[in-house]
Image (tube, rainbow over all chains, first blue to last red; front, side, top):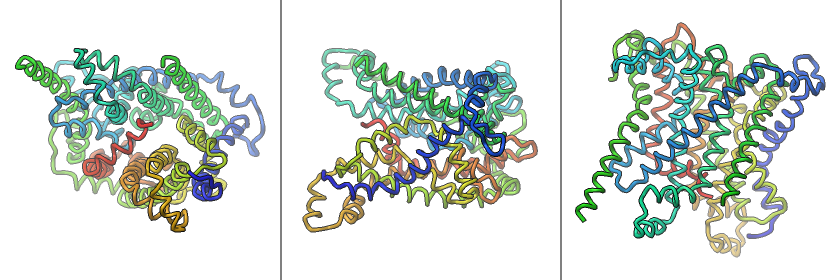
Length: 286
Length: 278
C-alpha cells in the first residue's frame, strides 16, 4: 500500500461530500433543532422547550413503551428463529435445499408496502384467511385490529416474517465460514450434534449474532411502516404507536421539527446505548 | 453401520417434518398475495376460504390504474432505482478502493466514522435532510431528491473495501511500473476484477431503492412524482378502494424482484451476507 494523500482523497471526495452534506450536517443540525421552539417563525432558542415537553408527554412514553416491548419480544424471537433456519438449512441431511432457501429468503425482497397490504387482508376480522382458518379448526376469530394485544402481536408477526430470513442468510454465511475440521474432531470424539452447536457453533458465531442483534435493534427502534400501514397509524388508539410513528406525526404532520428532533435523538441515544451494552457483554466473555 | 444410517434416516425425516410446515407458513403470505391479486373484490371479502388463483388480475390492474397512476409510478421507481444503483456503485467502489489500496492521512478516522454510522438510526438525519432538500434546495418532488440523499451507504463501502483489499498487489504494481495512472488502474484493472462483488452490491442497492418507502413518502408526495410503493401506500386504508387492485400492485412490485432473486440468488446472498464476514 502506498502513501498518497491526494490520490486517495480524489477517490473519496464524492462519497465524503454526500456524507458531509446529507449526514454530518443533519446530525449536528437535528441536535440544534431539538433545542429550538420551531412552531413560531422565526425559530427561537429554548433549551427546555422540546426536551421538557418530552419528559412529561404521555404520547412519548406510550410510543417508547410500545417500541421497547416490540424490541424485547420480537428481536429475540426472530433471531432464535433465524438461527434455527440457518442450522437446519446447513444440515447435510436436507433435501430440496433450494426450495427451502427460497421459502425463507424470499421475504427479503418483498417491500414493506406490499407485504403490509397482504398482512392487512390476511388478518381482516371477518374475511381474513387467518380467522377463517382459525374458525375451520374450531377456534374463535381474533380481532387483530381493534384490540391492543393482538394488534401488537400482528406487528411482531409481520416484522418477524419479513426479517427472519435476512438474519438467517447472515448467520448461515457465518456458519459456513467455520472450518469443517473442528466438527470432524468433535464427531470423532462422539460429541452430540446438539452439544456441537452450543459449544462450537454458537461461541464461534458470537460476533455474527451480535451483528444481527445490533442491526435488528436499530431497525426495530425505528419501526414505522408496519404500524403506519398495517395497524393504520398506530391503532387501535395509539396501541401500536412507535417512536418512528411519533416522529413522523410530530415532524411531518404537525410540522413540529424541534420536538420530532428530540424524539429522533432519544431513539439514537437508546440505539447507541443498547449497542454499546451488547458489544461490552460479548467482549467480556471472550 | 446399518443402525447408523437408520439413525440418519430418522433424523432426516424429523428435519423435513419440521421444516416443511415452517416453509409453507413462510410462503403463505406471498402465495396469498398472488391469489388476492387474481380475485374480484367481492371474492376477497366473502366468507369462503379461497386458496387458489382466479382469473381477475387484468381487471384488478385496471382498477388500480383508475385509483392511482401506478404505471407512471413504476416508471419513476425504475428510473430512480437504475440511476441510484449506478451512481451508488460508482461512489462506494471509489471510496472502497481508496480505503483498501492507499495509506493516507486521516484514514483511521474515515473508517471509524463509516463504521459508526451503521449503528446510528436514520431517524436522526431525517428531519434536517427533509428541511434541507425541501426548503433550502427546493428539490421536493424531483428525481434528485429521491436519488442523491440515499447515496451515502456505509455497508457498501465496507463491502467494496474488503473486495479490493483481497486482490494481489502485483496486479496493480505491474500497471504502475508501466506508468498507468491510478484512475485508469481503478477503472480498467480493479473494477473488471471486482465484477461479481459489483453485481452483488448492485442488486442490494437496486432492491433498497426499489423498496424504499419513508424518504420517498416524505419528499415526493405530489401525485405525479410518487414512487410505486408510495403510490400504492396512499391507497391502503382508503374506504372506497379496490383491494384486488392494491394486491395487483403488490404483485407487480414483488414478483419481478422474486424472479431476480431466483436467477441471481448467489449474488443476492453474497451481498446480504457481507455483514457476517469480517
